Image (cartoon, rainbow, N blue to C red; front, side, top):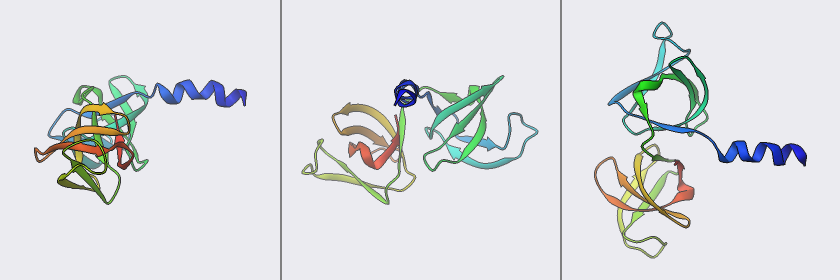
Length: 138
């Protein structure tokens, strides 16, 4: 029980970053000499796991870990769709008319939060409310 109480504040205080560049390389280690295993686009959110100099070890919504150069990230909040489909609605709530359907892996810019709903801007430009539980990020 004590361990649970001690570790809870650390979970709440997770540090998040987003890709600040058009194409961000995710590397196997801290440094340009390490191979880039995949890339992501601007806004893609990550949880910071550790730092090593100017490099951050990050985790994405699927649990994959990689290293990114810190200056290529920022603190602009984004979310990524973790469900197969997430409806963006005109108003927060399941009865709001759907303005767009977002798919798995779509990047959403966080604009506002209200209860269990987050107002977002889809990378394609549409703005709407999405059930926060269908997304990952901040």
